[in-house]
Image (cartoon, rainbow, N blue to C red; front, side, top):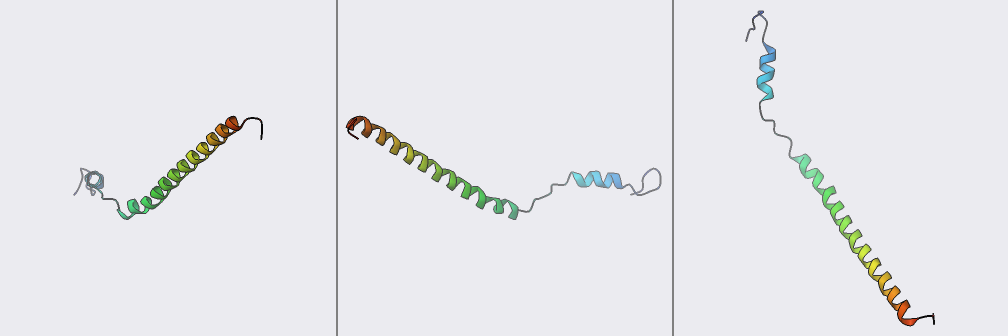
Length: 71
């Protein structure tokens, strides 16, 4: 397509092309799922460990109060 100056109108062509929906490669989205799931599992395990340690310290504190100064 020729513009008003006689040259090819590339700007108009580029503008039309920018409105076209570009599909992104879907393999990238699947590649990120493995690290996300492994991080979620790691966070869940850390939460279980924290609750276990917290319960253990509370039981130890209760046992220390129950036994008294004999330890």
